[in-house]
Length: 145
Image 1 (cartoon, helix red, strand yellow):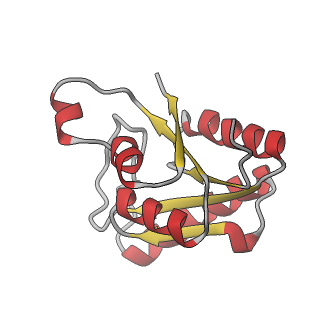
Image 2 (spheres, rainbow, N blue to C red; image 1 turned 120 degrees about the horizontal axis):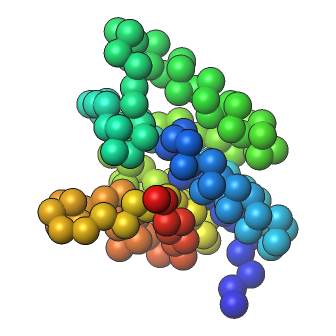
């Protein structure tokens, strides 16, 4: 088995996301690897309760959304003991930004949550599926629900 040096946690801040975060921290500890976190804000944020990423409707500006998400990232990173230089909050398409950051930062394991969708949802793709097929790094998809 590969000895991982750099683990990247993809954070979505859902309740289920805590399981993914815990798993990433466990693996980083096991391999004594560096742990980094990325959270990608979609260009057009929309509430999606199926994924647990409900965006409060009282947030009226991109700045307010950015500040709220930044605070969530800081809290998660502090719980996981991730240094400020290893935290990323990025606007864009999640699949693309995760893969791009993993390549730039020499990440060798990406830990991501997966809802294991079937049928039409699977045909349309998911972030986990896109990352799995687009990256050179190993991917651990933690099943959610």
